[in-house]
Structure formats: C-alpha cells, structure tokens
Image (cartoon, rainbow, N blue to C red; front, top):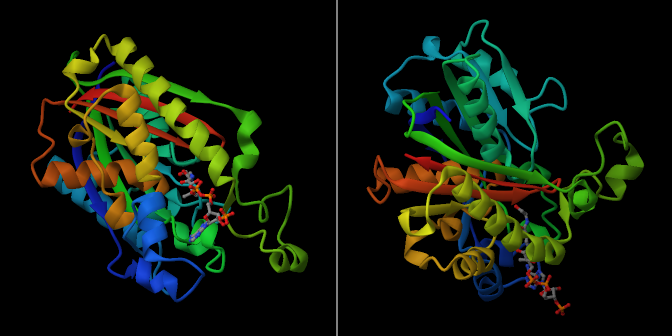
Length: 325
Ligand code: UT7
C-alpha cells in the first residue's frame, strides 16, 4: 500500500433547504426528520446551475491544498451515481473545465461507496506504478433525481462535492488497509429504474415516476450498520491496526441512527466519529470527502492521524479504507 491524500477540497451549493421548507412540500415535520434521520438542513444545486461547478470548485481547492497544478495530474476518477449525461458521463465535462488535456478519465459507479471504491482503485493503480498523481472526485446532485412529492426519500438527500489528490507515499503512510465488498442480490434496494437500456425513458416511465431515485429504506437500514462494521474491522485487520489506535471514523452520512449504531457496535465514542449529516444530509459519493474536508479544515483531523473511512450504498456495495492521513 503506497498512496496518500496530498490535497483535499469540497463544495456545497449556496442554496439551503431546511426541514421547515420541506414541511411546505410534503406531509412531514421537522421533528420527524430530526429524530429519524438527524438531518436539519441540506444544500440544493439551483435548477439552472451546471452540476460540473461542484466538481470544479472542489477540485480547485484540492489542487491548491496539495500545492500542485492541474498539469501534474495523470488520471481523473469521477465517482457519481447520477452523471451529467448517461453517456459520456461526468468525467469528460470536469476534464474539459479543468483543462486536463489528454489524461485519462472515467466515471466510477458504486453507489454511495463510490468514494471509498475510488480510493481503493487509485491506491491500486499507484501501487502498480501505472499513475503517480490522481484526482478523485465524489460529486452528486441528488436533488435532480429526487421525487419532491415522495416524503420517504425527499427529506434525506442533499447536493455537494468533495475531491482529493492522491499520490505515491512512503510505506507506512497513507492507505494502510482496505476492504471492498458488494452483494448483487440486493440490487433492488436502491434504484433509479428508467433511463438505462433495460427500461429506456418513455411517456409511461415518466408518468409512473420511474425516473426518480427510490429505495427500500428499512431494508437498507438493516444492512448498513453490519456492512460498515464488517468492512471497517476487515480493513483494520488488513492494516494491522488496533481499534484503540484509530483517531477518527468517517462514515457515509446516511442517517444519524445508522452512525450511532455503528459507533455502538464498534465500541467507539461518538466524539471520535465525524458527523455533518445535520447540515448537509446524505450527499452520496460526496459525503465522506465533504466530512473529511470540513473536519480537516476546522482542525479536528490532523496530519498523521489514523482514519477509517467507511461506506455502503446502491448495488449494494460497501467498503472501508484505513489510512494514516
Ligand atoms: O446512502 C444510502 C441511502 N439510503 C439510506 O441509507 C436509507 C436508510 N434508511 C433510513 O435511513 C430509514 O429507514 C428512513 C429514514 C428512510 C426511514 O426511517 P424508519 O425509521 O425506517 O421509518 P419507516 O420507513 O419505518 O416509517 C415509519 C413511519 C411510517 O408511517 P406508519 O406506516 O408507521 O404510519 C412512514 O409512513 O414514518 C412515516 N414516514 C414519514 N413521516 C413523516 C416516512 N417518511 C416520513 C417523513 N415524514 N418524511
């Protein structure tokens, strides 16, 4: 294992949507949303905004933080569930905006675990000597695929982006252990059905609302805690690191009750877990880099500390990365 995070950045669109705003849209209450999810507000990308702006701003910050220029990158990995276009995805638009020239890029789709999957892929490619410095972006404009009439989903999500520059590191620094898993039998739990080649968009699919993101919330909830606990423990074992030596856990921000249950099962106090779901809701692939960036900037997370990043999401996918930051 031989790569580390050189620079980090994030972006949140300025428009705030509070629980009180949602009370005016659907039959819900601030109390229900806070108690059942821990969410108080979220950011929403304006209807007329180009979603690329989120990746651009997060990447520029990450480049600045890492003290390098875009010309020094040799790969872009863009983790997202809902790309700018089904084809060619999102990465080409960000590469164009950042003027990345002829370097390769690709979209990575692994549900909300996309950022963790991206870290493992980037680490492997650097370890194999294929690339030196990789830009990994997690960006999501979930508001664009949300059914604003469905109270079961619309209260949960927010928009945002996070980016990291990953580069070769001396042994013993950066990524120390990883764990990736998935279970295709649970593919139905989180889905946007229409618009792919199995169910192309038609008047019927639009009338039936099949172009919106849907999920079996309760079923996802049940698996989420076990999956993140399993992966975190496996990645720690692979790294040869004891739980007692971990400084911070940065879990995917899907529901505060999932995060609390994870803390309880791992026997880690909540004050060692980074939480920002109250302010940004579930931003899918952006959730871990957003939380990491925020805690790094406000001084909680420091260089040299041991971090566990863990996520689960559509697929279902799950995983964890243990790193010396
Ligand atoms: O990134 C991964 C993506 N997704 C997730 O991680 C989601 C994981 N799941 C969850 O976070 C939770 O299951 C939810 C927050 C989605 C739902 O919480 P829950 O405690 O599992 O609630 P529930 O679905 O069992 O619903 C309880 C009640 C129901 O009413 P009845 O049938 O008991 O009368 C729902 O109709 O709450 C009702 N309800 C709501 N009430 C007010 C569901 N959504 C709302 C709402 N406002 N927004």
